[in-house]
Length: 231
Image (cartoon, rainbow, N blue to C red; front, side):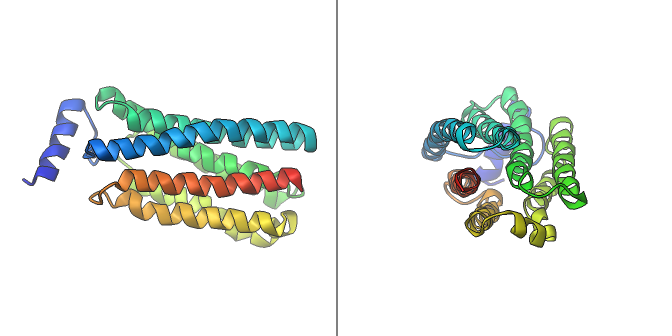
């Protein structure tokens, strides 16, 4: 058994981690990841407040509600990610993992919400809104009640949800400004590229790099939502 496998086995056995969960980061990797999360939570709180204040001044009531849902999803994801990843290895950590991974589904659906709200009321827009939130609900249930059992499926669902808007691209393109579309697309590409590092568990600083991709991608989607408010 290699040192990597031994450390993995010890973390699972001593702390009740489900099969397939690894915790092999050294002090420097944890520090780097902690810095990324501190930046994310700090900037996220400020950005969410600014967004809602601007929405209250420039947007309609419906848009304010949609933007608030997005802001809540963003802050929830950042806060739970920081709490889980920086929490000491213990049985509680694996419980926090369920909520951290569940928050990703909520963020994807919440991010879609202000964009779909710009579309005209139709079968397409209603189906898309119901679709992303239904998949999010299913994903959350899987993460909360079947932890560690469907991790590969979860990654597929994350990506499928994130790119589901492509199926109705023409309708979305008619409803959103070109700059907003570009910002959404860039954010989606960055999220997808970051998945490579999420699954590359033997790479040094893999977790910090993955979370760095998440922050940058989330920044582009935030800019897209902000563009909607200010246009």
